[in-house]
Length: 639
Ligand code: 1YM
Image 1 (cartoon, rainbow, N blue to C red):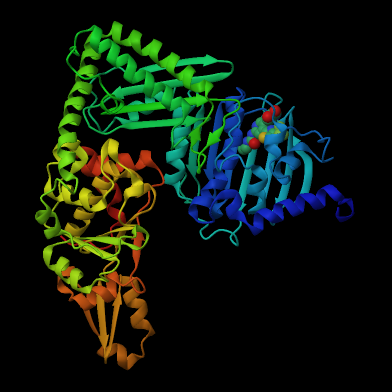
Image 2 (image 1 turned 90 degrees about the vertical axis):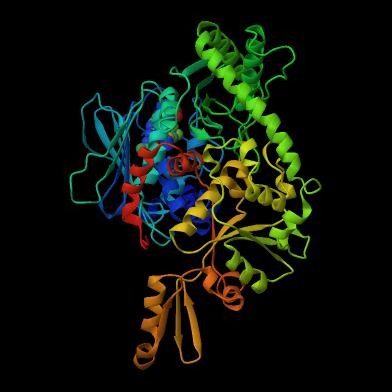
């Protein structure tokens, strides 16, 4: 086989070698996120086949030894010799960069963002890959090893039922490339379920074969598609009308659909997708719907005399309060825009979305006057609250604020340059006092909190703005809130939550994160929020003082000491921040050269919304279940 190598083969190997040298360029990262990315690259090909109308079942299995198998019942990757490469098309797809995109004409291809870089990238980053194609009564197989080197050309290895078609791919990620090789079932499950919601009638199965037991796995098949997604997202919330409004339309090969239902909460839960990819930053499909929603509700409310002449029109913010909505567009040629390619740019979709939504929603309101009234009244309440919030918000502007009150709480830093400034939000006055003494006054601001702040999960903006603690935080951040929020005005690059390492501390941290996530989401999304990590133990021996973050570090440190020193070491469990003096607090938790900060990030807004709802919402049962399911992860329990 060595002698068969020609120029094409050499180019191919150079291509895959480039992927191995810079995996980040192709899959973003080589952490667990990148690892799971490999699965989606392969699944995307099956999904494309489903979108083209040929595949009804997709199966994903985590095997023993951490390889993954993806199976579909589509047409099977073509097995003939490819005219350009002179090798089989299957082998070409797995060895030539971006081959998938070039070959498959038509259909709704998944492209843009990090997805769609192709099966060859998975091959390049795997220690072995086996591809089987079932077609015309034959089983074809090709095998690769060691980052995409073909070790078995496409070969017929047996026969199958002539009616059976499909592709089965098994790959084992290369341990030299990835930090972690362990696939997380829950991570896969969340996305597999989402794919099932987004592609009605498509059955997806996920199974974990790593344990000995014969596991059943999870089967996802939703005939109702995104309607069922909306019902799922509202399951821990209280809907204010039964029916889920589901509208769809198609024009010039572009398919558009939307499903929605209002709940009695105050948050907006609008998620949009293009070819199954979450468009985090919206785009024309979302804009079309938002515009139509505001217009149609206003027209209806005026006609039905629910909104009087003297009343202000409902705004976009009013009509999205408590709204759970999924917008999904399937487009043969999507243009993704923005820094993270999370925005749909195709302008014709705005019109299509507006038309489909306004026609359908208008009819829904006419035919369901009771629901219509409930929805309009919900928006009118939001409108009134918005006006009240506007007044309250004006009060949080520095000029209007009772200056002494505000400055009594915040000890600001001297620097006015946000890029070097940070604010510590500290639990309790006594820790606050130590932090003030121990800080670097040039760059570190201190805001002590007295007790617990308000849980904003079930509070409207106007009421939240009446809360002293929250007002102070808004004023300190400088960004404003709600419609006026402006990230560029953020006065601190780092917002550091500093609470005790106990249950009260965690509770306060979750309350603050709820506030930030609900009212200052970009601050969290852009990575400005951190949790300080005060040490849990102090170990003293001789003149040495060592602080460690947890049990494991403590054991490791003690093990590193000579026997006679270890025996005399004094170990103290740190009870709280308030116990440390200024010098200690600075040394362990604040000094930028010594401290450890935990960055709080949000990968998946849909998941984050559900967790906040569960932890902080008013339904008790889901919270009890969450605690039961996660109790196993608890390391330090102090009650
Ligand atoms: C488990 C992974 O890759 N399925 C799959 C891939 C392809 C096809 C069908 C397919 C596509 C087309 C025609 C087409 C691919 N084919 C190509 C290429 N599952 C998995 N199922 N016939 C079959 O797009 O026209 C790339 S992917 F380029 F060879 F056509």
